[in-house]
Amino acid sequence: PLQIGDPVSAQRDPSNIHDPNAISVHDERTGKRHRVGSLPKKLVARLSPILSQGASLKGRVIKDRVGDLQEIEVWLDTGPGIGTPATP
Image (cartoon, rainbow, N blue to C red):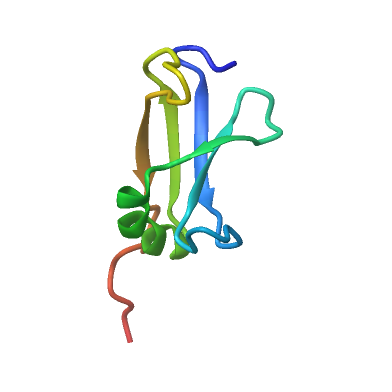
């Protein structure tokens, strides 16, 4: 199980049959990107288009698991040129 401080990443999961905007969360401890969950639906509708442009989400666990939920903190790395208008 994930512990406080463990690194995670998140990426789009367009093959998700329940939500084409779904974003899955992956355990980054081993480098194998094991899927451990997904972000809430209210959040992914806004983030999914940004991730489609090449941005990435990184994060870490900030609270111990309670039932099926584990709180994580994520940050958006937009990189150069993502979210900015293209120049002609």
